[in-house]
Amino acid sequence: MKARLFTLFIIVGLLLGGGTAVAQEQSTEEVLALYSQAFDMIWLILAAALVFFMQAGFAMVETGLTRAKNAGNIIMKNLMDFSAGAVAYWAVGWALMYGAPSLGGFIGSNGFFLSYTQETMSAYGVSDMSAIFRDWMFQVVFAATAATIVSGAMAERTRFVGYLIYSVFISGLIYPISGHWVWGGGWLAQLGFHDFAGSTVVHSVGAWAALVGSAVLGARRGKYVRVNGQVTVRAIPGHNMPLAALGVFILWFGWYGFNAGSTLSGTDLSIAHVATTTTLAASTGAIGAMITSWMWFGKPDPSVSLNGALAGLVGITAGTWVVSPVGAVIIGFLAGIIVVLSVEFLDKVLHIDDPVGAVSVHGTAGAWGTIAVGLFADGVNDPGIVGLFYGGGAAQLGVQVIGVLAVFAYVVVAALILFGILKALGLLRVSEKEELQGLDIGEHGVESYSGFQIFTSM
Image (cartoon, rainbow, N blue to C red; front, side, top):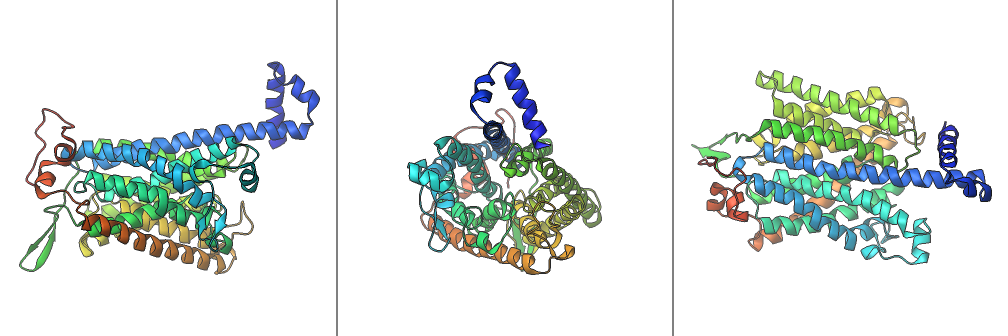
């Protein structure tokens, strides 16, 4: 199949008059290699563009599920966490994540500011910088995803300057170090831990940082009210459900770049397999969350169902390449149920205020999806990765659990230090007046809906 595909494009090239000299001077294998490199370049840059577009999806989801008086602040955070994070990832993060392993596979050690010699390029496995630029472009959008997850969980009461600071640290330090453990040849990779596109590497890292940040920051004013020793949990509805729905569809669309792009090759025919399992898990995630909300609340809740689709996407991201369509259906459906239970537990029991359910969608569902690799992997694309339910025993499951716990512990400690310092310096939370007035005016001096009455007593 690959040979026929390449041959077709070689013929097209010859017909266009651009490949005659090449065909005369180079062997068929060399020509095929050139076309393969070209396809890889095109595919990864297009996939990176899809993942970048997910920033718009995150912005719309967060804006829709929060109050109108904070819409501009949400947009600014999603703009600047990518902008500041991209520079941090260029300067430091890429090197820590994909540099030569050091300290026992704990951290990368070269490639700072994308600076390479011929020797270090050879060690990376390339002969020129074009492949490194390609790979950096694909990876920087993943770093931005990890950072922007925090935005939704800490929405409506975080100082903008504090957000800028922790976006830089997450993109440039926290995310790359644990990313190196898995994708940079670090110690978890050496154990055999499998996370194809980032259920844990990307999503759970952002979610665990969001969990700590929300706890350190505290709840929005009026969210948890203590009356006669009892805590009453008050819902604070978002202002635009259609906007939230648009964001989810954008994220779903971008996820094809996120997951299928992680094949890292435009000539890898498993792209179709990954796209199929991704679609099925997202679909059953929405169904699972809808059914759960229908049974729990008496009505099929739109926001819960939307988060269910996202939970299914997050859940399948780790195993999308190594599970069958049947496995994807089960993983997604259970992720949709789990995300509802997790949201209720964090809100009603732990009293951690997460306006958009980011911790549950990306953290809880991400942990579930990563562990599910050890259950549902069937060896379809990698015979070395077989889960418990397909005769692989408990070895892979054990490694997956170790990876989930290790990343959780590392991120929680790192985030506690970061947010603790920001809180001590008074850079984390806005004043009560600014929170009531809205962060659009208090932090940015603008109104997102000029001329409309959008203020409340909450």
